[in-house]
Length: 243
Length: 107
Image (cartoon, rainbow over all chains, first blue to last red; front, top):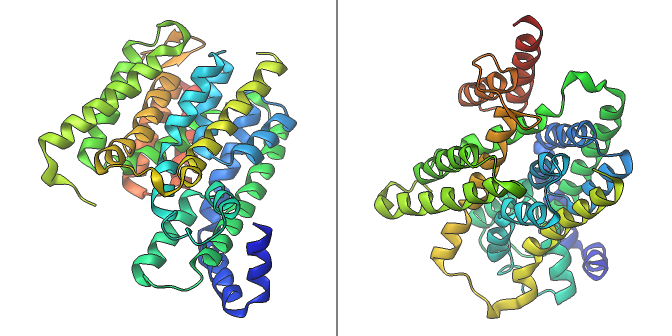
């Protein structure tokens, strides 16, 4: 990444691409900060220490996986299940990287890894938007780097502010619920695609029925049945695809 | 939940974030995802989140609270409705929390 950063600084047009990446993320800053604040507060209110919450935020940089892991950590779910759940929630990153790696292939492998690690939802959306508008944009990796770093900094600032705010707010406000509500706002728009809605409903139902299974296996069962139901719904009605 | 277990859990979540982001770039162009695999992957996050949120709203300390006056459940339902109307994450979280606080203190 340092080599790319150096190249970015020494070459004017790369620097322009980098700056444009930064500029394209700034309008989304209020949304990123609100989300990061809630994640920070929810981590503290679920019982993590300031060090643990900050460490989680810096190392994982994955808001929804962090929020999803909290109820599991509190209820003492086994480590493998927490990790597996976080992997499932993060599977969208695999889809993102399948798309972005085509455009970053000219970079050395170590740079590719760093860039891949920095992917996030908002910057990915901006990156794909730019590619649809200007498919042959030069210095696309510098643009990616600018957008990724800007997104990372905004997120971490919001998250750490939330962690400190959370440690000052009394626990009986029940603010950890805000984490689950933030996830609601993430899932509902995905349900516009009908097979996803089917999957979400089945996953909810099964995870509720199977809640008393040991080791939180009801969660796993819910995810598997939800995904199967969604695939089935998609194969029954493939023409309804909206995107 | 002791300190040690929590740090391991944190390492687990961090591991998940690194693996999902870096597995394809690390393997290079040799590994390609078929269209069907990619389309099934896209359902996973929504299903996983639903399977986490729903029990979190219905159960408190491991006990089922199906009462129509369960504040967490009411807040969850309200947040779905608020999102459908406003399409704003911030309003959804704030509105849901207000419903939670009101029902908790007045019902």
